[in-house]
Length: 397
Image (cartoon, rainbow, N blue to C red; front, side, top):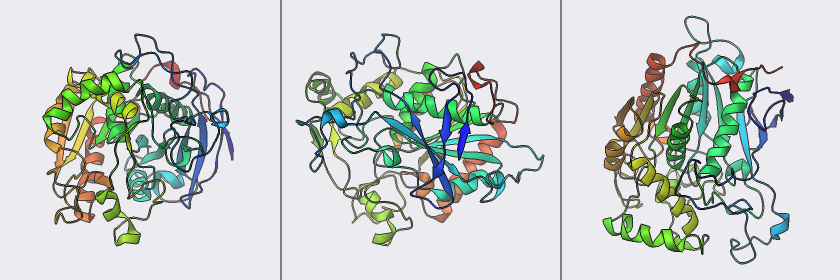
């Protein structure tokens, strides 16, 4: 289905969204969003510490730094894109079917999910819970990730957090154009929780969204003091010269445990969320550490923020008896300490028994998380709150 969307955002005005059946989830459809390269490297950009951006997208490979098995010539690497996903209209329940599942008979808002690193959107149960609560659900796969990965790209690799932030801007503009007047909530996991915080701070005067929900945001490096200080300074010097250098590569016990093929709860594509893990590269980690340093100095996000985390951290090891009840990726104490620096209106919620992606936890913790999110949104976001900048004007036809 081809659907025009009017948004008033540069590069998106009059854009036609070519919805096609989603190749990964039955009952969903996807639309490719052209995002172009990263924004100009002005000093007033998202991260003032980031040096001038390369002319090519960071995710493009060269003959020198291509992933093993990737033989695409650099000149053939496609431009980065993002992919917007939604349930096919007229299917599902609640807001997805057109039947409003709220007492006052009014849609509550738009809920946009953004995945983390080594991740993509596959959480159909999240969409269902959000739709049943009266929200229109969307997800976005960011550049070089999930549905947006293209041959010749290094999966998930960026050298500047303005790159995924650009994708987020385009996705938010698109969903606002499809549902003008409705408040928009961004639900961002892990690395995207960091990106969304910096993005909302950079656009705080325009109020592009009405609320942020951060699921285990990546606010600091879960490592030793030495790696968080001295090694980070070395990375600042080395990263620009060897951005694709692999700093670490290890399997993800967390992802392996979740996969249904290994006896876990969830069906997902192991080529898009890899149990063997994704290499951590110098340029990507440098961008993340710069973003974390900016957040640590304090942001001024204007909208209300819910930060959710597991109640405990633990080792990412298949021998860990609490692998299914702890965050084995991040240090939850760091999240607790740094969350108040995101803005003036931040609520932190700990979920007992939650895993790193709280939406993938066992039944009890997962219900507790979704109840906490939807309850908080019910209190903080109401219909008619979508009073952001004029970029939201216009209607889908």
